[in-house]
Length: 217
Image (cartoon, rainbow, N blue to C red; front, side):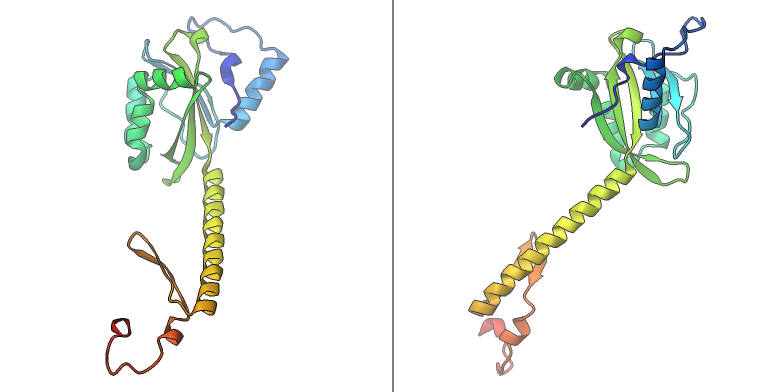
């Protein structure tokens, strides 16, 4: 997975309120590139319990509450926006210990796909990506980027369904060859579900059974 890296993102708002230095052309290009990929960019600090919005794109999702402690922001996200089926993974992902362990294994970034409630009340798939950002605070400081991947998920689901249909068609052709050449009855189960039933079974079982079940003969 390749992601735009915000490690060199210029933080335009300073903690002291001083006027930030002018951005270089390279920083401006990087900022625009990041904004074209991510819908939201946040700077979070577990040690200071802070959450600052660096960028919010107008689109599918509402802006997060401003000037709220990090712990409260995460609680509200979990309660109001994260899909209930993804809540446990979201909470685990944003625990300090979990992030530290994940980033120890993949130091560039950590990522989690969840469903988040959009402005229209429906859930959309997003990828939450966390980059270590000690240069902006300390060891517990991170840049959090959110990318809308709903269309990617839909495309992946369609590709998976097409592959399943292709496999089913190949299975049907293979089983048809067995039936045509051997007059063998072919059934296929997946768990308790019947996934294949030969269309020639009525033809092969046709006949008089004197009221008996054909499978008992």
